Image 1 (tube, helix red, strand yellow):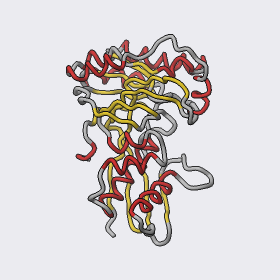
Image 2 (cartoon, rainbow, N blue to C red):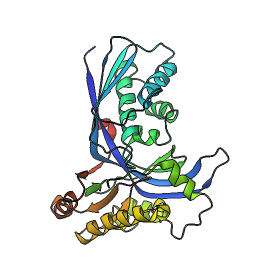
Image 3 (cartoon, rainbow, N blue to C red):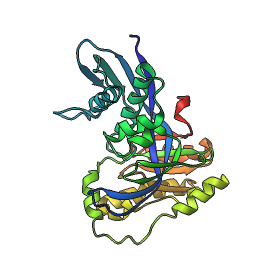
Length: 291
């Protein structure tokens, strides 16, 4: 078959709250999530035998099945047919282990490619359900746009799109294990929580300022002190350079800031790139079916 490809856009968490520990061991989440234009590229082609994955990144596990292989197997199990031999390649741009959903974005794009090639009639809701077998934020990465995410992150409610703006993304030179942060959350009484209802109201009103002033991520409270200071330092650079608001995305450590225009964002991007190579400018993406 002819190779087909699709962009795999990153996500940010405009707001992230942790409500408590669930009986199943997961945490109850409430988040406002947003797709952005920084993206990897996923290519699907016919393989010679079994499943193969090629990438220019360095994040693949040393043993066991990759998320991509698990997603392929779950997809064809849903169709009730054996997996054909497939070759998948990833061209990476989204920083790994950053809280930007790069791995989930790649798997979501792969699922959309599989649907395009093998089951174009399959509803997006079914793709989301298949994705959930691989990861909690997979359903949002399949759907994209702007959404309220609840439960483990899989209960989605579409929200009005984020108004046009520019979003700077900056990944510090360290990684934060997600499991470690969740362990630090247990028993924690957060001093501050995001105003998610207010943010949803701002989106309904089309108020970029209303959204930007409500950016907040409770994970920032549980960062180890040295990491917290560096994240705060990046936020300060963005705010001093004119960002309307800034916060850490997901379990971090990537930081994002919202700017009205590309011209206003440019000085901050220039300043950040002096210290952080993995700094990017992006815009909101409202609907993945157009990609």
